[in-house]
Amino acid sequence: MSSRVIIFAVLCLLQLGAAASGIARYERTLTAGADVLLAVAPVDPADPFRGRYVTLSFELERASHKLEGSMPTYDEPVYVVLKVDAGRVATVDHVTSDRPASGLYLKADSGWQDSDTTIHVSLPLKRYYMNEALAPAAEEAYRQAIVRDDSKKNYARVRLLDGRAVIEAVLLDGVPIEQAARALNH
Amino acid sequence: MNAPRSFRAKLKDELPALIQNEVLDPASAERLTRHYELDALGDGSGTRKLVLALLGCFLVGAGVILMFAHNWDELSRPLRAAVSLGQLAIAQGIAGYVLMRHPRSSAGLEGSGALLTLSIGAAVALISQTYHLGGELGDFLLVWIALAAPLLYVLPARIVATLVLIAAPWLAFERTREFDHGFGYCAVVAAVLPALLVREHANRVDGLTLLARWAFVLTVPLACAALVVDRNSEPWLPFYAGLGAAFTALGVLLERGASFPRRPFSIAGGLGTVVLTLMLSYREVLASVLSGYTHGYDKSSWPGMAAFALAALAIGVAAALAPQVVKARDHAASALLATSALLVGLYGLVYARVSVDALAIVASVALLVLGGALLAIGLRAQSASLSNKGLAVLAMLFVARFFDTELSFIVRGIGFMLLGAAFLVVNMMLSRNKNPAPRSVT
Image (cartoon, rainbow over all chains, first blue to last red; front, side):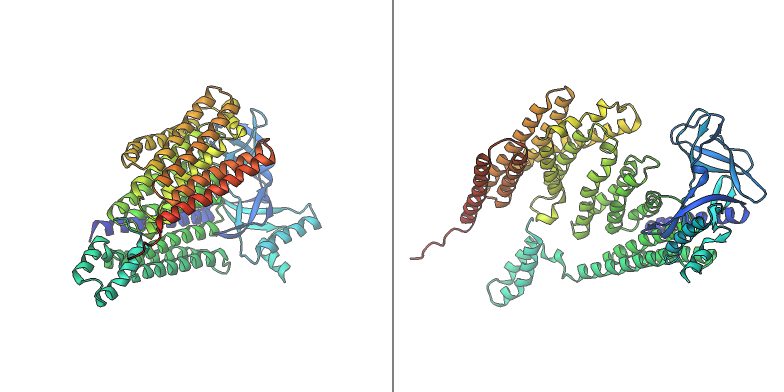
């Protein structure tokens, strides 16, 4: 077997390994991660390669939060430490640039700072991919949900493990967004 | 041997008839075949196979990506993972089979390389979709390119290089969150270029090599803009002047005697130098050269230093190749290199706070001299193409000044008529010299 074929085989293993390790990492987060709800507001664009998705804007990204410990430097990630109520709804306890040793937290990008002690954050969870026929209806379902009663909350059900977050579902007033969109399509 | 490919193909088609009609004897035909390297042309079926293989693989790969983009929510997560890995493994199997069983098949290697590259993109897309990964398009492309680019070194597939080069500039502008600065593209070029150079060294320049060259000359100025322009940074002028000169010099070394579409370096270098000089004949553009400096742009930051390093690299490559251009006695290319050198000098004068009004006039005069020089060189060499290029440069300058000077309409009108007349006269003269009237036989 020529050296070129051996190198090609190694490259193939690397490509498969990269894809498989990604799958394994996210599967582990989904199966073993803590289940929390984060309040969201979806809108619907499309990606030429990955299809239609609902863009998620989180309520916790709109407010500034208490910063504990050292100030993050330019481009440095921060860790958003969460507290969860009885209904699994998560809110921010504080933000820190030092990775917490334990507890519920997720890694995020640091945003602008109002002062030395408060900071805005940007979560890495921005997209919820949906079937191309359902995504426009999902946005409409969301719009109707907030028009009917703006006290009802919409959440992303997120699994958290070691600072990594994977979205499991988006719930419009407790109903999965796919179900709400299908009801609207019918 | 610099004869155009179309001429060689025609000659190859005609040879059997010429021998049959006793216009040429077989020995002469053999000498012509050797001289014009007609055997290297093939019979065209190889190219057809290659085009069909590439088209087929592209359509299959693009179809797979679009099918996945539909987002089949009926499929469970494990099934999606299996599909993602399975289609990648199948494409790897096809490429591996071609590599082991048909390592000399250009169509097989290029086609399976394209299919595998698209399959990697499909796998990354499906995993992103299944787990709702939030990265921007640039992040997605980075993973795709990082996994696909090494294939170049084992599958000698120039189409993979072309795909990677075309996708890479998006990194410069899409990854705004991480402030990529264009370094993603520079890293991709550094990874791809050695493989392309090895392929170029080992083979004749064919359609796919040209495609990769075009991808290179079109994407370098575009992607580097993220570093030298988008950041409002100072060295865009010396960078683009150096890049234009480097491309022109590479054109002289690699593309002498080639037909128009087979001269990406010459075309990009010449056009880039002329457009840059024309831009600098506007005082507003010259005033913006130091805008980064006057607005407190920090040259000591790493993106600032990298932008200057990139400009120095472009100028360095051009300076290193310039002696070979002079040695090749290519006067048109030498005129373009001199113009680029003047543009770098203009940057120094702007820096020295010389009046931008005066420098704008210098740029206009440089364009006038360049156009005149190309016209004169073209006339001397009896080259209609070069003469017309000189006239086109002069016409561009006239049109630019038509809109921003206060000359009377009569003067401008006369200027345009003179230029139009020059076009007609030059082309008639050259046409007459090329086709002299047949002498009468007595």
